[in-house]
Every structure is written in structure tokens, then in C-alpha cells.
Length: 366
Picture 1: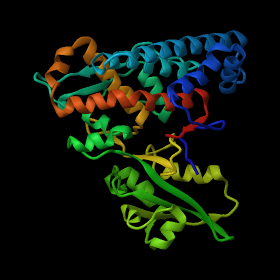
Picture 2: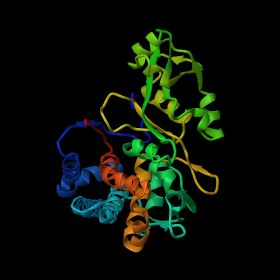
Picture 3: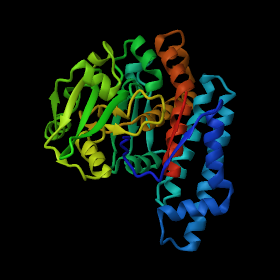
């Protein structure tokens, strides 16, 4: 069972020596083959006029090609320069996801960096999400809600990049806010059905905002699971099973309840915290995150893709306008963490945004 925050037409499984090549190859299909591109546009807008479909296709193709050019150029550069080109790739991919759906958006970035006071430190660095721009429209597409005029600390955004969770913990910035290890099972006894969850203790429900806790507690109750049951249900052996807390949905529902209804039940219980998983490593069934706090005390849904987008924007701006700030950080653990991010985030973003553009959940093997 793989919950998703948006509908998907199907699932592909991919494994290759260079995943970026394969992912861009799938995007080139709809960018370079006009009939495929128009078919994808039509899948989002069945009643779209021919001239509008043609424009949407041409925009999709242009943004996708630019994104690939920037991505491949960035791979040849050291991290002190590559982040700028990776961000240009990210924004073009986001534009492609919007254009193929016929969503209008303001072409500006919609983001502003705050580098802090010299000499800068990682906790001082922030990204402001303004009221309009590409990211605003992209965020609305992903989470079905608007976000504007909020400031996110860079250190908090980095907590949502699972590929650097070890490095993040190592520099003592704080615990990671994303886990790919959450598990869910659908059980029934012939008369009724219910969901069983195994949620990692590193991301406890009690750390979520009060509204999320209330919604979850209205739908799930904590239960004790014997280690033999944990092994049978979730493939969790001793002592790994002690790293999880177990929950059961209530009240039970009819056994003929649809898969979509069960999925929506989970999404409603942890609104903004459940995301599709894009790595076929059999460690988890969905990505679990905490809502991300902004400087004004508000909390917002955040996934790896959006956190990577915001952080790469900051890094690109740092390189373009304030390379001196980056030089001040050299030799610190913050530089090591940011370098790790720039190396890991591009493929993480690419695999996710490709699924968003094509409306297919693409998983891959390491």
C-alpha cells in the first residue's frame, strides 16, 4: 500500500547505472515526441482546445529541455558553482509540471534569500516565500494550499532531505524530519477491516502540531504489538521492532471498503505528513514527515522535493550574489553539510518531479 498525495496513472520500476539518464529519457519522450506530449496534456485537461494543448505541449518541451541542459552542466562543476545551475534545472522542471497541466503562474522566483549577519552561520540563513511566483504555484499544486510571506530557516529545510540525514545528525543541527521507514498494513477478519501502522519513534506523532495530533488521535489508537506479530506483519525483527510505535485505525470498516478510501483515511489522519515513496528498497511503504515550522510560528506541509527546491534556491543565490558568505563557511561543518546536500539533492528532486510531471509513481532500486 503506497499512499499518495496526488493521483497516479500507474507505477514504473526503474534500475540503471545512471538514474538521471533514465529519468530524463522518460521526460524526453513527452518533450520530443509531439503525440506523446499532447497525450499527456490531454490526460490533465480532456476538454482543452487544440491551440491551447499545442501551447501547453511546447512549454512543457521547452522547460524540460532547459532543465536537462542545466542539470548536465551542473554535474561537471564543483559544488561551489553547481548549485546555481541545479536550481535553474529545478525551476524549469517545476514550470514543466505546471505548464503541462495548463496552470498559469508568475514567472518570477517568488523567493528571497536572507544570508544573515557576517560572519554568517547556518542558523542565520533563511528563505522567504513571497506571495507570488513559480514556487508559490508549485507548492499549491503539491499540497493544494497556498503559502506566502513566511520565512524558513535553512537548517530546518535541510532536515527534510533524507539522503543527508546522517550528515545532518552528525553536525548536531537537529534530528531529521523525514523518514522512509513508515509502514502500513490493511487487515481484515472476514467481517471488518482496519489499518495497522508502524511509525518510527524518531518522528513521533506527539511532535506534530496540535491539529495534526487531534486528527490522528480521532482515527488511530496506539496498540501493543508482540514481536512475533511485528515480524509477521511488518518484517520487523528484534530489536528493530522496538524503534517503532504501533497504531490501529478505529472504528473498523466494512471489508469491501475501497483501497482509495483507506488511503484517504490515512492522508486525513496525518494531513500534509504522508508522501509517496520513490525508492524500492522494501524498508517502508510511505515517506513520513513533520510539518515544517516557519519563523512566525506557523507550520506548513513540507516534503523532500519542496525542501530541496527552497534550499537549492538559497545555494544558487549564495553563489550568484554572495560567494563571500560561502567562503566564510569554508572549513566548517556547515560547508560539509551543504556540499553533501548539493551532491545528493539533484537526483532526489529529479526522481520526484519526474513522477509529478508524468503523473506516474516511478520507483527505482539503489
